[in-house]
Length: 465
Ligand code: PLP
Image (tube, rainbow, N blue to C red):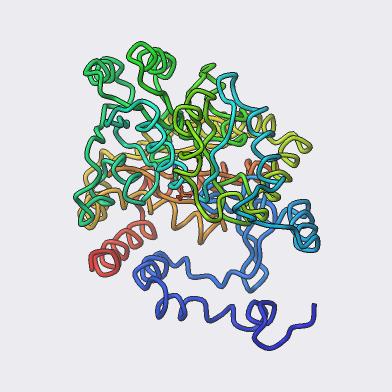
C-alpha cells in the first residue's frame, strides 16, 4: 500500500522514532521513565513469531509476549489473512437488536474444547471484563454476595477485578473496593472450607497457575477446592485468561487436574493478539439462572462483546493452535526449558527456585550469603522490594537481546511467557543466556554491582515519584 501522508502506513514508516516522546506527552510518562531507566527504550518497528524487531533490524526474543497475547506468534499470517477476509466481506457487524454468526461460531468452538459442564459463552472484550462478568453472573445465579479469591491473585485492574487482588501496590488510592470480596491463602483448603461454610459465598475464583509469581497449586488443591465449592453450593470459577489456549501444555490448564468448573474466563491469546477479546464460558445452569426470562435477556452485555473482528480472530486463532499443534509444542518446549534451567538452583546461591508448567516459566531469586555481594543486593532492594530481579532482566535484554519481565509480590521473580511457536534453538539460547546473567549476578562483580547501584539510584528517581 502506498504511504499516504497521515495514513497508518505513513505514521508507522516515518514516525516510529517519536513513540517515546508521544508517550511521555500524551500517554503515560511514568511508564516512559521506567522503560528509560531500565534502558529498554528501543524503537520497535516490527514483530514476527517469538520476536520483536527494533529500528536497526535487531531481533529480540520476546518472552513477555504482549503479556501472553501473542501465543500463536506475532503477526501470524493466517490470522492476518482472516482479518483481511473479514474486512473485505463488509459483514453485518453488531446488529445489536439481532444476532450475527461469527460470535456464535466462536462460542461453539470454545464450548467444544471445554469440560462437560460448560454449555455457552457470555462475550466480553478483555480479561478483566470477563472476570467482572463472572462476578456478576455468580451473584445473580446464586443470590449470594461474597466472592472469594486467592492470595497473590491477579484478575485485572478494573474496580471489580481489583477487589480480587490483595496487592497494595494496585489497590492503594482506589478504595473503597467492592464489598464481599475476601481473600483466602492460595493452597490452603481448610481456609477456603471455613469461608465457604458461612453459606454466603457466590463463587471462588482462581487462576489454576497464578500469573504473578507463576505459583503452581499444591497437588490436590484445585480438585479439593472444586469439591468444597460444590458441597456448599458455591460456584467454582477458573480464570484462564493467562493459562488458557495452550499456554500450560493443555488447551485449558484446568485439564491438568481434570476440573469441571461452573465458569471459565478467557481472553488474551484468543484473538492472536490483534484485537481485544474476552469471554466467560458458563454452565447451562448459570446461564439459565441469570438470563431467566425475556425481560432479563440483556441484563449483562457490552456493545462490542459480539464484534466480528474479535470473533473472526478467535476462530482462526483456535484453528492455528490446532493445525500447528501448539498445545503439545508448549508442553514439550516447557519441559525442555525446565530441564535446562532447573539445575541453576544447585549451581547458584541466588537462585531459590525454578518452576513452570508448559510455557509459563519463572525463576525466583534470593539474596546471596556473602557480605559484600549481599550489600549490593540490599541496596537495590532498599530502593524497591523486588527490584533485584532486574539484575537478571536488564542484562538479559542488553547482553542477550531477550525481553522478559519481573513478576512477583515483593519477591524477586523473573517470568517468561514465550510464544508457543518458539523454536527449540531459542529455548536453548535463552537457557544459556540466563545462566550467563545469573552467574554474573551471583558474583555481584563489577558490571552487575554498577548496574545495581545505577538502578537503585535510577529507580529511586523514576519509580518513587
Ligand atoms: N486474569 C488474569 C489471570 C490475568 O493474567 C489478567 C491479565 O494479566 C487479567 C485477568 C486481566 O486481563 P486484561 O488485562 O485483558 O484486562
